[in-house]
View 1 (cartoon, one colour):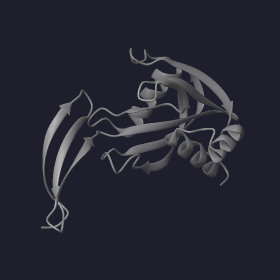
View 2 (cartoon, rainbow, N blue to C red):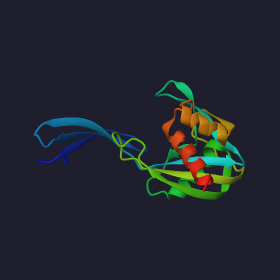
View 3 (cartoon, rainbow, N blue to C red):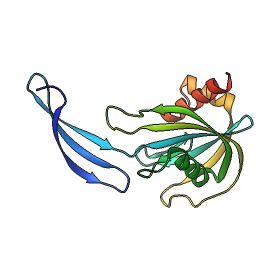
View 4 (tube, rainbow, N blue to C red):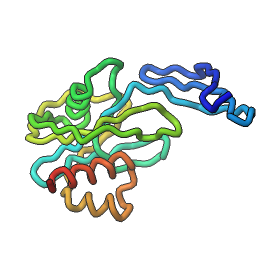
Amino acid sequence: MNSREYASRVQWQGSSWRLRVVEQRLADGKTVERGVIDHPGSVLIVPLAGEQVLMLSQYRLALDEWILELPAGTRERDEPWLACAQRELREETGYQASEWAELGHVWPAPGLTNEVMAVYLAQDLSPAPLPGDADEEIEVRPMALEELVGMALDGRLRDAKSVLGIVRTASWLSR
């Protein structure tokens, strides 16, 4: 048997993702059990207004604290990536963008989930709010891109997806 032989069962099913427990037989014959999150994908948005990025201060239950992060959200199954980014931007910041640039796709946590995250730069912003998710507490905080690059590089910005988005944006803009 190779390391790809396994059996799995759904342990928990939510509205957008599910947790599977996987029993995997390794090449040496041993069996291990792991949790895997099946995820429909997500988006990360860097909303840039001139030199200011619209960051979010958001409460995160898993950390039991408020953190600084970029707008992001889970994609509906079969929802186009850009449509998801446009919706999430309006829900979380109250703005829409007329200019969009795709900055690639990443695996945010490949040891835990099959989630793929699409990264977008959103520019030419104008007000266009949509109602946000009822369980989200969010405060929009415009911050200078240059300051955020420094924070991403020195560790003051600790949210990994936001670090990635800020660094990719700075790189894309310097081309």
